[in-house]
Structure formats: structure tokens, C-alpha cells
Image 1 (cartoon, rainbow, N blue to C red):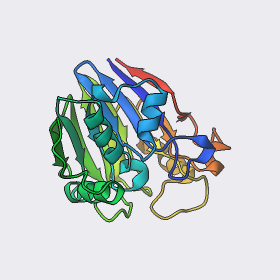
Image 2: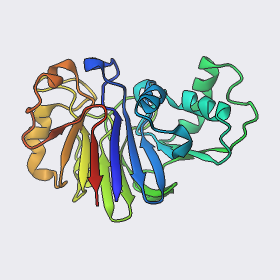
Image 3: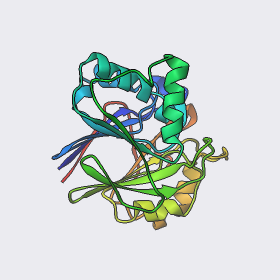
Length: 246
């Protein structure tokens, strides 16, 4: 059983009053966050999710609304007297960007002696990698973030969760989502084209190629929030929404 909880389903700008990207996966072997936007620690505590229970954070790309909450999580865990390791995994560049971001926000925080081990893994494209209680395969997508951007295919026991991160349409999404139990996909705009982001029009044009059992739209602009049926058959995510996969 995998329990999915959308702690943050919003875009970078808090459209609709939503928290930034942060999706909790509770598995039988542990708990993982998919992305950790800058608002994620607030979202976790509002939802009653204990950060001490998080085993790993898996990051799709290094933009603040997907990655910027990690420095706050790292510091929170120090003050919470965490003793067990915290694993952070993401694209190449993560190991350099994370301490730089921490130093920009809280000088000295990246080098302070911690009560727990913070381990950073950079994911190789196409290689299945163990990240805490799950296996993760990264697929290249089209999104400029100063480092590679990935879609993520996460396997926990018999369940498979695909996640687009942010990207314009690319065929790698088809492979990432193939026969998954759920494809959590950016649906930023409807008809108009926004560079590096996914439109409902592109999804509609490629629905026949997406073989996931369920399609869930997230990271929506005000335009898309006003059009919940823009992609036929898709579920519109909201903060607090849950899904259970057996």
C-alpha cells in the first residue's frame, strides 16, 4: 500500500492560495517527499505531517518552488534533534546548489555540525536508484533550471508513481508514465504555449500515448484552476488530496 498526500499542489506563485510542489508518499517501508518547494515545511506542519518521519526527499529540478524548502527542512530537523539520516536525491548540480542556497538564506548553516547525517545523491538519467524506501528512475525533460530537470518514476513495492516535474511536452513523459498506477503531471496552462511548461492542449493531443491508470494534474495557473475539466478523465489535485495505491 502506498498513500499519496498532496501537501502542495500549486505553482511558483501560490495561485489559488496553494502551497508549492510537495507530495508525500507513505510506503510500508518509510516516507518520501516528491519535491519540497519553499512553502513545504509550513504545508507539512499544517497537515500534521511529522518531518521527523521523512526518510528522503526526491527533487525533480532545482527551482525554488520545487527545491527551496529543503534548507528549512534541514534546519528544522536540527532543532527537532533528529538523529537518523536524511537523504536528499535529485539531478546533477544538487550537491553544489543545496549548500549555496543554505548559505544564502542562513550563513554558516551548510557547515554546522549536525546531530544527524545529511546525505545527497545525484541521480543518473535512466538508472534505477534506491532512495530510502523506494526505487527512482529519472527521465530528462525540457525545463531550464540551471541544471538538468527530470521526470521521476518511483516504485514502492508493487506500486508505481510517475511525476512529470515541470516541462514542456516531451516524449520521455510517455516512457516515464508507461503503465504506472498514477501519473502526477504538470498542467500549467490550457491552450497557450508557455516555454518549459506543459499545457492541457499538449496533454489532450497525447492522451492516447499515456498509459497510466490515473492522471492527476498539478502545478496549475489561475487559468487552469478555473478549468477543472480541461483534460478529459484527469483528476485535479488540491492541497490535502489523498490517493491510495494497493
